[in-house]
Image (tube, rainbow, N blue to C red; front, side):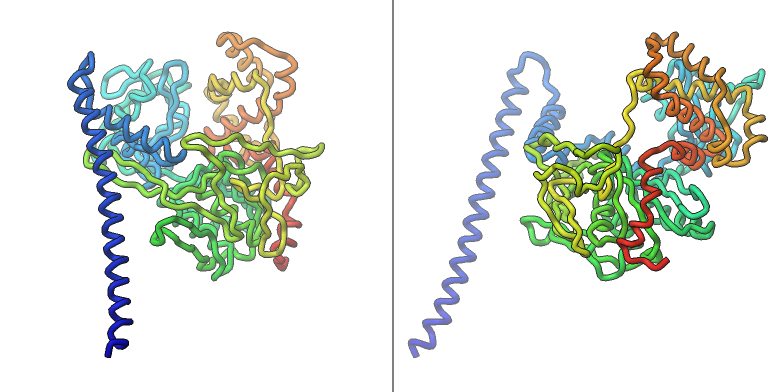
Length: 530
């Protein structure tokens, strides 16, 4: 009988021991945490009682939370209640207001573009209109941060504005009923030529996939046979939107991305559900501003040899955050896992606390277009794609082809910083809008046939002189094509919105133009039938 009881009893005692050990460990852990909480409470109380000036305990607590998170990594952050409201608007895809993009030009609130479908566009407000009064109060010299406070508001409320429009002798009065305004994350979508479609995605918000699919369907109906997906400068956003976008190009059953964490519940795999564009030749444009969700899409496309990645190495943001709301409307985000591409590459670049380590620079021989395998940088770990190609880890997505962005001279940097390209275009359009609209029926025609008059260039130089920007003939000539294109881009935006602006700008965008010449390799790589 003894041997029948010894083994079960041993198992029971072992289980009790493990359970007791876990409880003791949790108790010790909780005790350590409580000690630290008491430590902070004591420090806050003593500081509040004895500091030489009155103490804002809320600010001290917020600073303490910020300091705690900064010691972890670059992306664990505290978000104030006011900041959180703006973040939510950006990524939920809408806000409530009058629906305009604006800028402050020469101390005057100027409409850059009415948002399509918004109340301002419906009332006939135009790009270039200058808002000089809001609800009867002068808005001249209004601070940029004060504009949303005046123009945003709950749906259904009204605001009155007084507008000066170039070419009209008298001001215009508008009563605008605020409404829900969409914030689009697909900035542009059009046919660059008879075969190549172009889609520019600026962020991954709650509506990105819906916008993206709609754009692709429209382009397909116009004869799209190849696609350039532009993710340059896209900082990322919602993971599910990136997963859905990548699934459109990658056959069902193939892994898009996966996460690893010390907490098993946070380990996840995202597998493609398949889409309608798994056989379209694809080039994805990226740069150092492409991060997070952008890297998930480009990493999956590259690892499955589904298309070519072109541009510059991406940012390297591969940490997963979870947001925890606090009672006062603020929140904080804590990193809970890391992203990996299908081949096992960690997207996150190295960091120490809140600071990133120095980036390694991309090197190449001669021309401003070279395959990443020609780079002399041997410090990055090597991985293999599904087809056996070499790709690189170490943080970010290294493009298949590196094309460096053009470097502007200091003169052009100053012109752009002062918004002089926009002002020069606005001055020209105030007297020539009707002629431009009658002569050029599309942005593509403007791009290919219109040359910026010398008078506009002279006006630009005069404004630069007045702003104390020293003229440099050598720098001016070096950037003359960029200067003309920038002015032409603003003219196109005035008439055709973002699509028109991008269509004109891409005409001299070297990264785009060179990438458009790589489709034959993209087709061969993905083994597509054409």
